[in-house]
Structure formats: structure tokens, C-alpha cells
Image: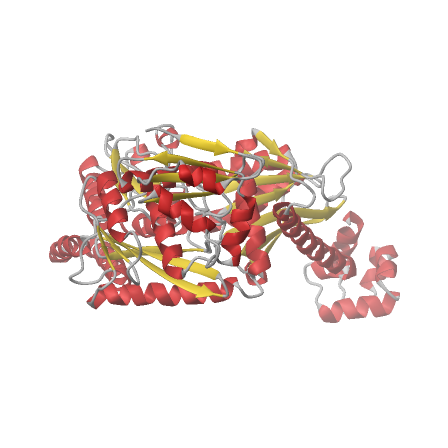
Amino acid sequence: MSESSTVQQSFDHKRFLANTAGCAGVYQMFDGNSQPLYVGKAKNLKKRLSSYFRTTGLTPKTEALVKRIASIQVTPTQTETEALILEQNLIKSQRPPYNILLRDDKSYPYVFLSKEEAFPRISLHRGAKKAQGRYFGPFPNVSSVRESLSLLQKTFRVRQCEDSVFYNRTRPCLQYQIDRCKGPCVGLVEAEEYQRDVRFTELFLEGKSQEVMGELVAQMEAAAGDLEFEKAARYRDQITALRKVQAERFVEGEQGDLDVFAIAESSSNFCIHVLFIRQGRVLGSKSYFPQDRLGEPVGQVLSSFVAQYYLGNRVRDIPGQVILPFAIDDIDLIAEALRQLRSAKVEIKHSVRGMRQKWLDLAGQSAQQNLLSRTSSRAKVLKKYEALQEALGLDEQPARMECFDISHSSGEKTVASCVVFDEGGSNPSDYRRFNIAGVTAGDDYGAMRQALTRRYKRLQEGEGKIPDLLIVDGGKGQFGVAKEVLEELGVMDIILVGIAKGSTRKAGFETLILDGGDRELSLDSTSLALHLLQEIRDEAHRFAITGHRARRDKARTTSSLESVPGVGAKRRRELLRHFGGIQGVKAASVEDLSKVTGISRTLAEQIYQHLQVE
């Protein structure tokens, strides 16, 4: 390719256009500081660039762009398709402010099934597909993968542990104890039986649930005929689980892989909703909110987004069919570019019927609803979440966060708190407190270990939701404890963040601990991400202190007599009336105590001994 450029402080567009060729290519606009403003493509560069400098007909936003232009660089290409692909590469690398930018340009998660082992594992995978095995997806987010993995774990009990854990186990783990794994790590299942479960898992992920259920029904009937009713019940439960999923996600008669796009617009705000269909199954969906700084019409916004969605991320899965709500510019051009990348035909349709039209309607309704939510009072919350995603370098915006804190007074009545923030902000109904017992007074590490273990052991057993982000209030010590607990319980795919106070212990000087404890990050005091973390931490602190004070005050106001065996409400009342209060009871001898109505000599000795120990 050849390249021509012009760089001037005061841009002379007439001179520039006089030397611009009328061929296909890409143009890049820069400001006076040589910073990119906009990247575009054109079938005819001369005509397209001339349209920016006409005297009438420009929108105010486009006029604002033109006023900032100090230089333009053009790159001719052989074909318009080549120009489209180059345009998306430049947008991805330069991220010009006037282009429609796709924030989520990371790869989607997949379900990975290893194949080179006697006892394969199933797990979540994101990124390059280098490992030997099969990849199923893509799924719209990690939550969708976890949902599928949880179902498969309950139904077929194929292991999900890391190989490093699997090859070093000497006894079954918690997953075996709660009947979610068959214990291949310690030889509790034959390889033939395990491989059958692996095959069922594979068939289910391929969308062949009907075939799996057919085999399970036959095995259930055979087991019942042999009077093996416990085994028959196991097959029955598997069939029930699969039928439920099939009813929710599978459409009879529909096959093939496709993505369905819909767009909603309100006051120059846009929401593009993508529905993922694989093998006739709805794997999930995701909403995007592109910003349009040039005032483009809705069709152009969708066209730019679809091109960037696929061409700006080469590791993204390209289905055989793409469904759009209406025809867009460059539809044939985008289809040809996708065909080249996929090495197979890609259809882009906007006129569909039957189930595809229902999916399109569903995507449209979701786009409208999500845009309404976006522009409501939650907009500020979403900005904080987006800032946190960007600050921590997360693949996607966290949908659920949990934060733990410890509170006590010199080790007395220690309480741990767990607060939950989801996409709507704080979620008090999911808050939890843990009364810490059996830990040395003042041992914050031991208290944190106990709280985390109790919390995530329950989650591993299927109670509640696993968070995307776990925040611990403390430095590397607390962070290390949390990391050890998660590893011991086999809890995976949770991003761990520690938030430590700085040397001044003042708000705004916190240090974040990331990446397994190997990296520290300090955010600016004005950062929305830091404000969100402070809000979550302070809420955890408040909730822990409230619980601790309530527990401490209850202990201090409770009569010591309540814990004496054989002393009920009536005898306590007689003792307090006789001696004028608890201090008088504590000062009394055994003889004095035995003189109270209803108190025998033996009981008096018990009361005396109990109060003296306290």
C-alpha cells in the first residue's frame, strides 16, 4: 500500500483534496497535537473527504470535528473490503474519540472440555484456544458459563478442578461429598463410567439433549428392571434436569449458530442488544451502549458497531448467520469481510420469520428496556462500575461484588460482615454476618479465614450466587488468607482485590492489591472506581460494627445467671430480688444462696462455682 499525508497547523483542505486520489481507502483525521480524531473508510476517498468541507448540510457535531482537524492521512487500498478491515484495525489500536467505540473488545468465555486425559476436566476458558480439547460457546458472560457448569456438575459430575489439584489429591474433596463429582482423583470411579459421563456432557453442549435423554431413559428402565432403584433414581433426576433446561433454552426444529442484533435509541443514546444462539439454544445476551459523537443516524450507528464488533476482535466467534432489525449500509461489504475471516459463508439478514423473528423481537424489547434503565437514576452507578472495570482491567463489568470486614473490641465478640453490591448498587437482602467463635481473641486473620470458609463453602454447596469480585478490607495478610481459602475450597473464577489503607490511613490514599498479591495499584483520589471501592468497604465496615455492637451489648446486658443449668426465669427472679441485683448474687456465699426459695444446697454450689469462674 502507498500512503500520502499532509500535516499543517492551519489545515488547507482545498490543497489537500486536489492531491487526493479517487480510489478506495482509509482516512485518519488528527488534531493540532497529532492526536487521532476520527478514522473512516471510503469507496472513493476524494468524494468522501470533500463531503466534510462543503459549506452546508453538516450536522453541528460534524462541524465541531472539522474545526479540530489539523491534518489528514489517507491510505489507499485495493478493495473496499480491504479498507473496511484496515479501518477497524485502526479504530481498535487508536480509539479515536469521534468513532463509535466498542468498549468490550475482549474475547467471550467458552466452556472447555479437555481430551488428552484419562479423566478429562470441564472448565471456563477465555482467550486463545491453545489447549487440546473442545471449546463450546461463546457465552455472553462468565455468569452464563457458570450456570452451565453448575448444571453439568450436578447432572453428570465431571470434574472441574485444576490439574494441579487433581493430581495431588489424597482424599475426596468437598465436591465429592456434596455429590457433584465422582472422585476420579482418588480412583472412586471406573474410567469407562467416567468417559460415558464425559460423552453425555459433550452431547449436551452440542445441543443434542434429546439423544442424551434417550440413552438415559433406556438406562433408567434397565436399572429398574434389575431392581437397582437407587441407580434408576439417579437417571431419573438427570433426565428431569435436562428436560427443564431444554424447555428453557432449546427450540424444537431450530438449528445452526447465529447472532441477533437489535438497537434502541433515545435522546442520542443508543443500546445495542446481542442475542447468542448456538445449536438452537439461547446461550444468553449482552447489551452495549455505544457513544455517537457525530450525530449519526441509527442505521449508521448499527453498521459501524457490527463491523467493529466482528472485525475489531479477531478472536471473536463468527456465526454462520447474523440477524439485524433492518438493512444497513455496507451490508454486503461486511458479509464479505466476515466470509474472508471465517473462511465460510456468512449470511446477514434483516427479513426473517418464525422463531428468528421472535428472537429479533426479544432482542428489541431487551434493548429498549436496558436503554431505559441506563438513562434512569442508575446511570451514576453504572459509570462507577464502568470505571472500576477499566481501572482493574477486567474483561467485563462485574455483575456482583462481595466485601468482607472484621469488627471487635479487643477481641471481644468478633463479628465478620459480608456486603453485596450488584448491578443496581447495594443489595442489603443478600448481606450476611458471621459470629466468629473458636478463634484467638484479636486474630483478624483467623476470623477472616473462618468467615470466608463458611461463606464460600455454602456457595460451593449450591446456596446463593458466586460473586465476580471479592474485596477484602486489609493488606497483603488479609489478601493472602482470602486467596488460601478460595484455593482450599476449589472456588475458581473469582477476582480477588485487597484494599489497604495508606500510611496516613486517610480516605483517598488506599492501595489496591491485585493479581494474586503480586501487583499494587493506587488510584487518583477523584477516581470513580476508587469511590466505588470506598463505598463498598465503608458499607462492610458499618455492617460489621453494627453487628459487633449488638452482640457485645447483648452479652453485657444479659444476666450471668442465664447460662447456669437448672436456673430458669423464676429462680433468677427470686435470686435477683433476694440479693438486690446480680452483684449481690455474685458476692453471696453458698450458704446465703441456699437460703433463697427454690435453691437447694447442690444448686447453690453450682451457681457459686459458675459465677466465680466468670
